[in-house]
Image (cartoon, rainbow, N blue to C red; front, side):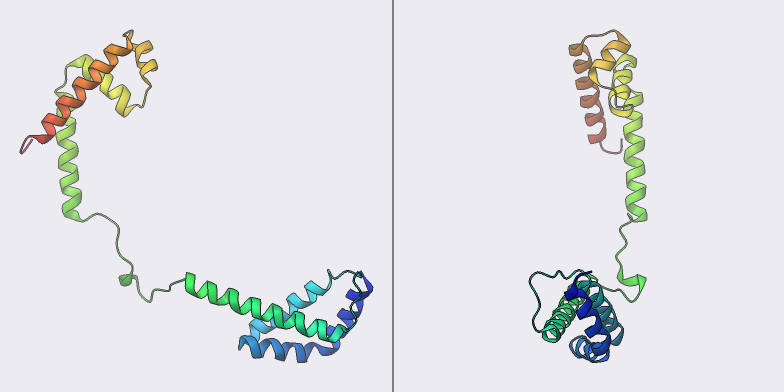
Length: 170
């Protein structure tokens, strides 16, 4: 430990109550002032000997004032970032409404019916690509067909499903 740190530690022990009052005056909060005083002790443990501190008391009080001001600014930032809600009723519900869920279920049922109506090979390519997330290369290898044939089946499937979904009442 440096001689500056030793001298500042001794001074902190003697002046602790006064430093605590300085921090409390800035923060208007006793527990926060205690935290600042503890931080002050930790900070002075890292003070080096070079340059030599001439007025250690002034240095210690300036450090306490700066730490308290930093603490106050951080607390204000925290307060502006955190918005408290008094009740759960103030928090908007992001879940879809019962009506929306029912409409979505109907849409999915219509889509599944459209997929079931596809020709077998077309349906197989569509399911492998869209539901099982297989690549075109993997589908070609699995079914023994060309890339252009996979593209043709996908185009046909998408067009038929889209047309079916556009029909009124499905």
